[in-house]
Each structure stands twice: as C-alpha cells, then as structure tokens.
Image (tube, rainbow over all chains, first blue to last red; front, side, top):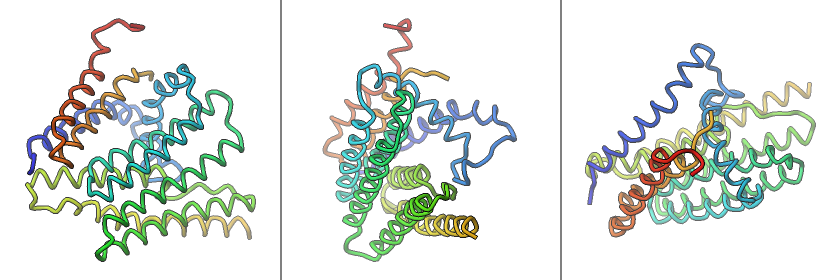
Amino acid sequence: MCHPWLAVLTACLVVVIGAREFGPSLRGSGSDWRPADGGFLGATLRGWFRSRMEPLVDLLLTAGVSADAVTLLQLLMSGLCAVAFWWGWLFTAGWLLIGCGSLDVLDGAMARKRGADGPRGAFIDSVVDRYAESIVFLGLAGLYRADWRLWLVLAAFLGAFMVSYTRARAEALGVVCHLGLLQRPERHVLLGFGAMVSVLVSHLTCGATPAGALLVVALCVMAALGHVTALQRIMFALRRFE
Amino acid sequence: MTREPAEVLGFFLVLLGVGLILDADCYWGGGALIVVGGAFLGAVHRWFPRGC
C-alpha cells in the first residue's frame, strides 16, 4: 500500500526544518564556504551538525554515560540497520544509518569534552567503525543477494574499505592523511539519505518508481567516489614520501 | 548555538515512526504512536520555562 500524502508531509517537514536550521548557517558563512578536507559535505554543514549534537553531548555526560558505551551503541544500531536493509525496510535502515553517524560524532565529542580522548579511545572507535560499516554492507548484500546489484554493493564496500585502509597505513608510516571527497560522514549521509529518499519517491509515485531505485544510484556514486577518495589519499601519501 | 536535546530526539523519533509506516504497513499503529510521541517531545519543551 502506498502513502503519497505521508511521503509529501515527510518531505515538507524535512525541507522546512532543513531550511530553518541550515539557512542561517549558510547566510552567515556567505562566500566563506569551503570543503572540510575536501569532503563534499563541507565545513559549514559539518559544523552545523556538531553544534546540533552539542546539547546531546551535555545531556549524556550529565547522565553519566561513557563515550565507550555510545560507541558500542553505534555497533548495535548498525546491526539493526543491517537487519532493516536485509528485510528491505529501506527508510528505517537509512534512519538507523543516520543515527549511527550521529552516534559516531557524539562519542568523539563526549571523549573530548571529558578530556578522555587518547589512543585507547581512538583505537576502539576506529575498530568499531570498521565493524559497523562492514555489518551495514552485509545487510545490503543480503538485500541484493540474488541479482547484479550485489556487485555494486561489493564495489562500494571495497571503496569504503580502501578509504579507511589508505589513511590508517599512511598514518602508521607518519603521514597524516584525512583528505578526500567521500569520508565516513559523507558515506553515512549518501547511503542513509539515498535509502530514505528512495522510499519517499516510491510512495510519492505509488510504486511507479521501484523502492530501491535511488539507493542503487547512491551505491553507484559511493562505489565511484570511494575509489576516487582512495586514489586521492594514495597520491597525497606518495607525494609526502618522496 | 545551544539547542534543546528534546528537539533533536523528537525529530529523529518522528522520522522513525514515519519509516515504520512506510516500510512495514502492518505496524502503522505503532509508527503513528511514535510520530505523535516524537512530535510531542520535540515541541513540548517550548511550552515550559528552561530547566523544567
């Protein structure tokens, strides 16, 4: 059963809240907009999102929640996201993925605010992030296990893996390397919103557009930009080693 | 720019409820309850003074 009116209302709600929230930040930044280390979201949008998460950081710290607990919650949420993808619940999966990205921002901010940011926390965060991302791709692989889109999921996964690996290897060899078009926040936004908008469009057109059409487009972009980002990092590191 | 956490949580809950209705039609009642709860949580803090 399709729900075009609910899809219209949801789209309007997101557009109105987005304009109300992000409009002043855009006007304030004016022509000063610049990308954050080359990521396509840009420094302004990232800064706005961090400022929006700030009250939650205070709330969780006041409640005595640790950054490690939030990191583990992120892992649990990505497991639920994988299950939702596997079942074909794309809007819910996209929502859970955006939630995972938010928790990823929260745990780092909490550790910094508490003065507990160090190698231990950074290591746990990185390892959990890799597991969380892999689990989500596993869910997508389950969704598309019977057709050609499985190859697209694998290409996107390989791109995401190489983006992380090139940074980790370069930093192990002494080169700080966190540039690139498609970093982790960008991947969360692209895949999460891709899945959610895909379902909204499908309900708006009452099934004339398949539910996963835009998600496949998002996966194509992820697969391409992931490898472009890995190449950007490889070239950057090679120049530093010369 | 400091904002109320309730607004953020409320917005996320509304989207979760909408997702349940759109993805799993048979759970529309639960989804609708979550939407109403999220909207209430997101808006209710405006009716009370800070600290309440």
